[in-house]
Length: 357
Ligand code: ZN
Ligand code: ZN
Image (tube, rainbow, N blue to C red):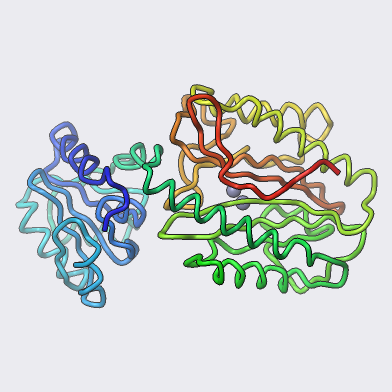
């Protein structure tokens, strides 16, 4: 079953591009794009050849039953090398485009040597379609977000001095699985005290202490779709400076959220939060972008960043809004929510409570 009901439509759009690209076919190598276009869930072990006549999913014999059940396009089972030989017949000596971000130099060399045709690198053939989520995708994103919320609610109340970060992370993961998640969305961060200054600090054997802030960044994955949420908690009484940092991040996120709606430039959304943090004197300590798209990949387009000059938010995009401040040797704060852009503003997909300190 293909949940992205627009897969046949997108495949057709890719096929329409072939004459413009002056190629006979395109070699799709991105696991997420393969999943999106075919419904096959193990895109990392597959490739997709799209020709004007149709598409062929190549994967190996381990996926015999699964690929035939899942794929919306014909499946050819073969070892990777034999798959290239089969594809050569369909290419028939004409030029081929390939997803250059997902083909290593070694694989590129192999394509050249087996196919003996000109190869043209392409990017972003499928990704623009993935920006706007379908109802089926939104249902899975909502489910992933709900499970992360619920797990966070259950585990956050157990945060206290003496607990190890890794123990908290494990509990979050197990709780999400019990609640029905296929898996965690990514390695869970539980970063306490000075470790909070590491935005992707993971979770270690460190014990949480009173007077520390604890940043938890986590998400669930359901049917291939991810969620992503961060909350920062105070354990006991924290210092005035930590409180200032926390409230600055909280207000920065609120400013960005008040600004965000369809039509807004991503770079301007980033600036709403960033300028607030800069004015508070912490501009040097917000080293990442305001947010990112979420879907089949945990990080995908659009980027809510200083560098995304041309990108605008559109109704149907699902993005995070996650300002942060990370001060070495002191600690850090990040607050992140997952939202769906709508015509009038946005809808929260994450609902875990948060408040100023
Ligand atoms: Zn996150
Ligand atoms: Zn994120």
